[in-house]
Image (cartoon, rainbow, N blue to C red; front, side, top):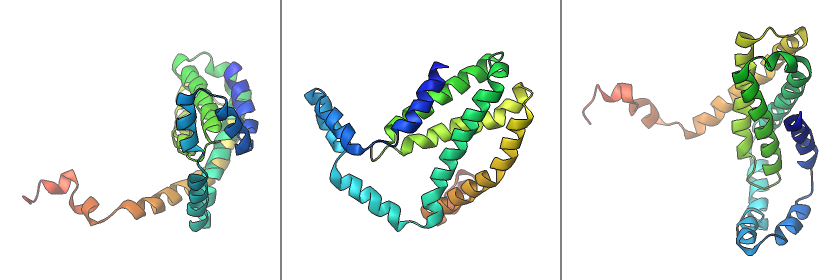
Length: 185
């Protein structure tokens, strides 16, 4: 319950103004102020906005859709499956850690480079989504939620494959370990 409360508060704190965080960092010791100002530099914030605006619409919105899907899943799973999950130590620990990590990702999202923490949080939540049917008998609500989320997850998979093509070249095909055994050079 404590982790879930922190998670819910983090959803609302994530929408705070960046100036509030700058004021908070000014009150920290000097050691932390230098590091904090690197993350809150106006140039890096503006460059991040330029990079986001230069991408296609499907890349801009895929992370938001995936984050909201994870929010809905975590909240629905907590409400409907909480009692069943408590009986399985591994699933319970993983679920509690996922909620706590996602809360941390929401707090880190206040920084310009904080979006990177969502990727790990999304992987944890999606693993619970895939792992939970093996451990508990899910309610009809959770099954409905999973069925609805399939379309959004397919969208996220297609966008990630498309983003992966930006970093894949001929070397990835020819230079892989399987093909390298066939050639000496």
